[in-house]
Image 1: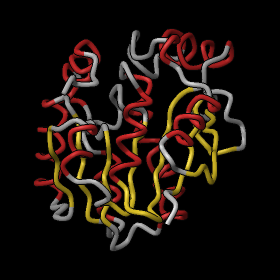
Image 2: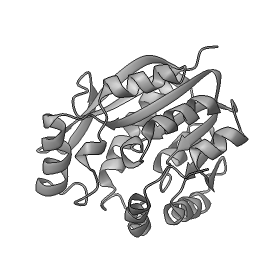
Image 3: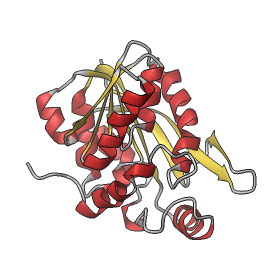
Length: 234
């Protein structure tokens, strides 16, 4: 199987792996938005007691927090250094109900179809060569009736200004080169991939940021950063 990953993208996040759990590092935005994402996911899927897969888990910020909500979590990624950081953090923090594997979503879908109650794939689709393949694999991994959550960045002029010029060059919230505009994904494109994969779009939320108060919040504005919640038909 051809691995659906960009070696440069894997290297980019591996080089920063040791800083993943530093809330004042390049990953500060992930730490700040994590409670918002976690609450939104939990409100839909009721994480406690569920078997959860976090696709593209990186250093494990979301995986760890879902485990602390009572879920049994498997985090997967193809970048080995962030995975080692995630494993070390789980040991140090005593998070017993989370484990990590270096495996592609497509490979795991062939190995463990329909095994998970909930699946999250956050801030990953815009970093892979074939995001529609990831969506199809995610759909295959979830049990009938299960929930899937995706987050990514819209592709339009406003998103270019806010997510690349603003976040990477002006405010320096993210390292330069974190994102490529051509890889951004319109909600209509993501919705079509979900329909093609046989999952139903149930909800969407935008994520906004005020650079003066340095505060993030969820809203109905999906013009830049956005999340969608989907469900696999029972």
